[in-house]
Length: 126
Length: 358
Image (cartoon, rainbow over all chains, first blue to last red; front, side, top):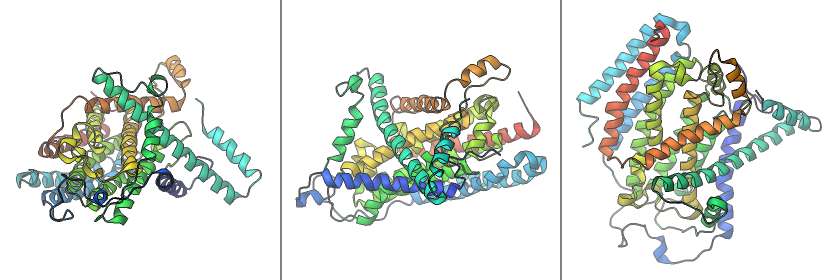
């Protein structure tokens, strides 16, 4: 295990917070500069939605098709299973064939889940 | 091989000579932040110029050539132009979420940016689960895009954001599984550790056929993840005006643009980390003289060079393939890439555990 530390700071959490604040500062700074130097003019027409030129009909924050939810749920299932595979992947060489057999069962269930979703037609965009 | 940690250590001991410990740490964190900010914005400006020049070459044009020599200052001019554009105040939007969305998008790409191995001893965050952290933070970006689309109160942005959400979460699976395949080979999740594992030979050569398959799948999924190229349905301009950022104006729009280019760099950077050794020079076992010559090229040049070559491939995709439909996009991921990826993972594991070398 090598340790790559910058400036001798070994606390990675601190560095992650630094990066987070840097991202925050970038947006805040640029917004501040833009507010200082950008022109401003007021017109009631400007505040309307940029759609087709005619006044918008109905609400835009409304229901949308269920297909998106379906793929989100499928993603959740497979992504969580992928997350479970990561720790095993790191220790794979030490665990050897025993670990491989245990994970093969888990992996088999994952593949069966995919086959089930496929046969049920959940992967079709209708 | 030159080591950048000697420079940072020198700065550290210089600061420590006249400051208390806590102040030194604060000053160093500020230095890191300023450095990240500078590299981030300069790379974005470079990428805008690069994409425009490459695109022009594909379309038999010259591209930007008026501002500065060879149009080099074009992206600076664009940046100032976008800063002096008016920020339009819209009615009927969710003001808080509308303002929050660019923050999420930029912070996600900045965190992923800080994990990349820039050079020997030049890496900001090095968790022992580095690559996992990278996959995790880069998926925050999709939240920003969904919020932007939802809060704008516009039908085009809503459709764009939902398409983007479905696309990004689907292709994240492929990215996760390709990364997992390479983690199996590396035996560590630390970014520095993965680079060190490739000191004798890059993983793309070491990993036999599964590494090649994983690389191809990673590049396809990475293109989809950045909403570029044949996968640009979220901002299909012929259908959705500009997709999820239709209602954003001026620099507010600029953040999404910035994050898109930086995500291109991050995807290419992670590909170079996993498959082409990060900052590690090209080493071939047995060719000692060759390896020594390769060590003379600075590690930063290796990393950025690999990332730029790989992002050329992604830009090439964009200007070569026509856009996919959403059903084609989802069936490509769920019916082709995902099963191939699962099979590829099993193959990689068998090769490592049973020692199959062919």
